[in-house]
Image (cartoon, rainbow, N blue to C red; front, side, top):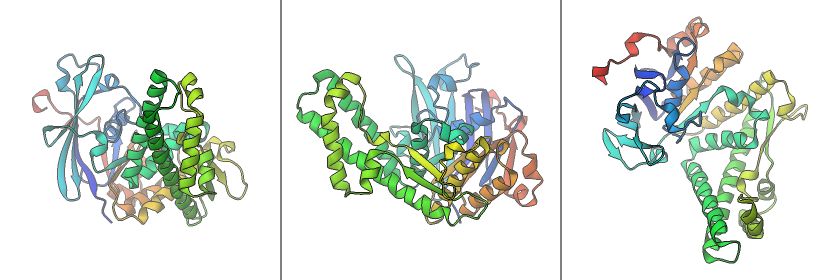
Length: 384
């Protein structure tokens, strides 16, 4: 099975510790190796910027510029050469100076583009070390985890999330400037907020249903899980038609105007939900398990997601797995890699040396291993 997207070449210029780096990729499974501090995670972070304004580290643009760059900011760049549905596309990310901070600029095939990140027809899904602590993190991290999986298959969900945040900001600006009195403008924004918010909640609800179905089909070594969305709107959608819940949402927004005016926050929201995860047999919540068991639970959710993707013909996704080998059982890792390989999704991974991969006959032939300490991957100044 073949995916519809490949990153065939990545060139970094003055990106964090990489003054110049040129990686040409031939395979679907890519393992970036190198000593500690060599910038393995920086490579994956640069790719994540194709799907997020601030990448998986949530970094400011000032932070991603090499500290050694003393010349023009035009010497900074991320250039990705993608193969999308049998078409080649070069997408560049550069920076320009704004009034107070740097701003991101995009180029397509060498020409300045007005496109923003979400306009490109692919998604990047990442798994980073902090996600293994998902159940002791805050509810926003758990929502983001679910939303990122949904967005990999449904671009409209990503667009709805962006619209929702935009409408929330607009509503609070109106309240701050004009107060909480009746206003047609405020009515319009709240109508939009309720409509988009219910679409978001419904997409989450339907996706969780699919994940729950898949757990029973995973092999016995994985915990059988039940995922529940714990927000008020989520519960209402299980009991009432969506249009009725949308009206309830709208009523709550109007009732909360005075409260939100004083607090400067949105007190009733689609983003007040939380992902609750239970082990089916013991009925214990995931956060009550040991740290090691929680990591297995998080990856079991990821495996259910891979099962979900089996049924999808189009997979415009790239996976980034940063340093997952250091905290997962090797057998578990090989099962995950086998599933990903069967799906044909290009996956970039990091490890200090990846020796245990080389020792496995099957995966040593499937995985393209790149040691970024190797000077052959460095570009000289006159080649940039």
